[in-house]
Image 1 (tube, helix red, strand yellow):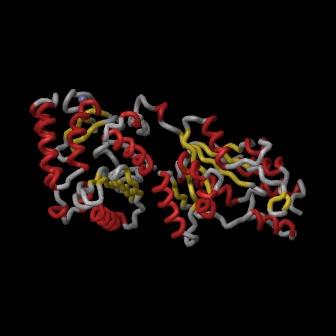
Image 2 (cartoon, protein in one colour; image 1 turned 90 degrees about the vertical axis):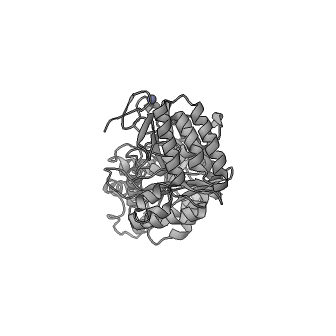
Image 3 (cartoon, protein in one colour; image 1 turned 90 degrees about the horizontal axis):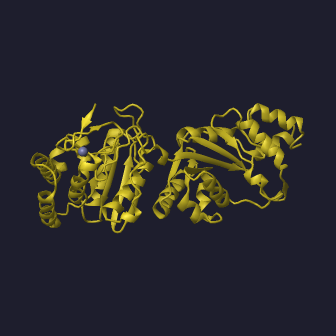
Length: 428
Ligand SMILES: [Zn+2]
């Protein structure tokens, strides 16, 4: 459906930046909508009754001084009025609109959104929250396919407000309308994309021009393609030997974290790890290559193995980031490792600068992982994606034990790896 800017008449495509007055169905191109957006942000983000008069007067003054035509001014005024008067009580039987603009204390709104979301999407949400200069943000994604092909984001809601002032939903139904007016369409990883933009947008709204890098991250947006970062996963490990669990994790990470590329990184480890001899580097490298050779967009790197010193994840990620400055790096790992990251060498730096894709096992430390993830997101703003595919329950230790005992490891390692182990007499 083609839309045209009500102001300049420019045709607006699906991925174009635009600004919607959602209640009166008026669409602006991003340029023409800027003024309206700024004016309305105040009422959307702060609906404290006491402050409302102040906001209203300020709004009316700005509107009168704006360059918009009379009819557009009327539309913007109507939008203001509807946002201002909208109340959840009048929308009891229509949860979708209730989600759109809910006004109350932050905590109250938070609970209601979670509750409504659960009713609609049949699932408990996993909200991300943070606080910037006294304003608390929360984003909920219920991730249910809901009328919209290919979109995970159909029921996404975000809140912004302070403890006792208003909470406002910014985005509903897959993106598009709201304070920061971002439109992601069928973006799969809506939450993280939203998050980045919300914070940037909010800073911008606070007039912190220096931190505003432009909202050029909409996937598929024309003219800004080069600034859209690719997503690269990094799967590290001793791979002694690589097994089906590693391969499944790599494959699931590509799919679920929507990676464009996966780098498998065999680690250089202490020669006598816990008193046990580690298999020669070239064998571990060769087995990893065999195991991942059939997987698309996947490479096995020898960076750590070629480094003479013991490599830390931090150093490796910094190296890769320098090598691929435009890529967003996701370190792929399991639950136990995720729980430890903060204690790693330069753990804080890792969490502040890189993203994660963590494999979740049903029934295994789920609560602990959940609170760890929330905590890391809150403390460092880290993007952490959960990988939910079931992984085969295999460990390298078990593979080695079986081989030593002369048992078959057929179901545990990829066939070419099994042949390689046999041919080279490893783990006997
Ligand atoms: Zn325009």
